[in-house]
Image 1: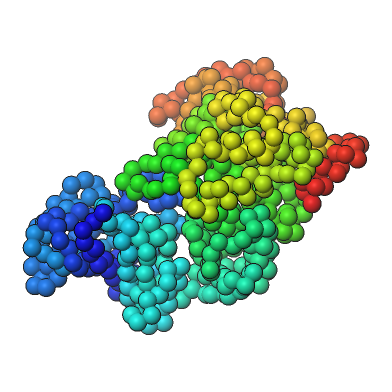
Image 2 (image 1 turned 60 degrees about the vertical axis):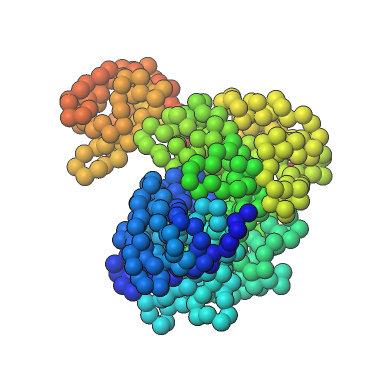
Length: 579
């Protein structure tokens, strides 16, 4: 326990927003140590990648608050500053943060708005993270206003209170002329806070958001907040979401709302981030119960935290009546097709995918699909199988909803971290069966997921979409890049992969005739499975020609369908699942 409690007050200004520079002043009062350590987080909860936020920091300086004398300091590590504070009770630190990266996990400042995440802007004081923080915002123009989930301090203009550093990190700020739409759900106030212009129809979005909130609240039996807001950045082509306890941040293409399939994708994003206010923000793996902002926080349970949430973001809009059963089957078919067309599913187990998120998922390259599988995608499909297993074992009296409710009641409400063993045990209780073999097969190994075995009691089947006119399989993808035909992906186990062709090679010709992205498939139509072709390409500027033996055509994708003549029992099971 600390013998004293310093007062910590941040001031954030942006006098020249066109410069993309936030200016931060940190005032610390009642400091009684000879050394002041300051650290900036290297990552932010909800996004499992070391992002090195301190690389955007510049013009660091430290002074005595009373006489403005400079204080000596040194940098101890990439994100660690140490200041000599002997005989100094009141200290002022100033620095700037360059902010020109419009994502949900970074900072962005320009002439239209200022947006920041706490982890990417603020220092914490080691051993003093549990103290409260004051944050004062100085907008550049009088008409700019402030949106944040932090409570205002009533007697100080534009000043907010975070009860501890975790809360500060969990409370993004939007400062500008954002549009704000208020609505109420279950007697609690909500807002849509929107920056940017586009073809979004706000009235429809609010109606659908209310349906999402009500549908998800039924699973957990309550809304665990006093108020909540959705912050949406309408960007040129961005996509993403980041959850927080009392809000979420979304980034979506500004003209991505008119077509139904694009709007449905956005609604899934809304459902996903809102579901996280329970699953992840409060129901957390033990490894994330207390955040270590200095380094990676490893857990094998992201398949549940993110993957199960992905399962619900697909089924919640169906339950809410936003889209129908046909759309649900189309979305499920698309996800299964993506899974079964990713070679990395046969290399990386699901638990390893979760554990290695820090070095793989967010650091993709041209080879990634050959060696890894997303814990979002496979976790979603494993949750699907578990939901169907529980429903089958209980004659649809129970479902994965019961797992979520139990995890909420036992771990989420008190914010007690769960272990992988805890999670397995709670699922086993609901499923009324030992799941050791299931977990060993589908979390710890790379065996194929048995979709049809789990679909059959519900009168469903998974079929490969075969086109008899499909050309034989070569195993590479190309894209026009300037004046060249760039190879963007090569399936490692395909004919092209076995011949030594690499991503970033330049495709030139098949059997001495020029080929490009537009006519590659047509050219392959002239050949049969087993034919040998001469493929000419540039590899690191060296002209090469290799012989490639073409293989059997690959499925166009996979489709979830209702079986012919399902029994009455199967129809009832399907109806209760997708009612």
